[in-house]
Length: 123
Image (cartoon, rainbow, N blue to C red; front, top):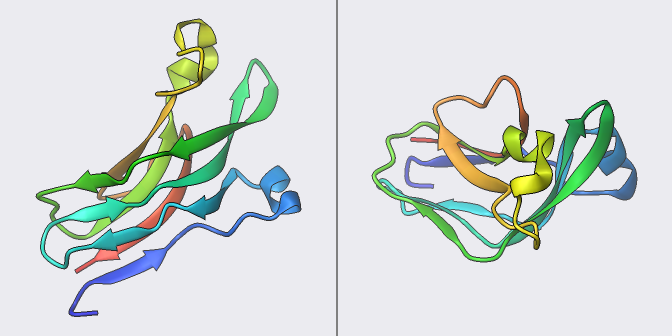
């Protein structure tokens, strides 16, 4: 792959595994790179497990347009993160559920919070 390795770190969704894991990609959300300094995540859907006041439930995350990260320095991790503040207090959330989560990149995955891995991209 011309020196760039992309390892998908997520597991394809199945009805039982969604219920016993921190979340799953249900379709799409494919991570690609231009082999220079750009990472793109395609449209797709995932379920992410969250907890509020002792109750566990799944957030249905939809990415409706490609997300492009430019000027990337490899290696990078790519993940979906649900904003903890939006889970704890949903009163400020958009009525349609938009903007509760986002796709992020960084040198390492988060150590806490509500998130699922998508890919590790290494030069």
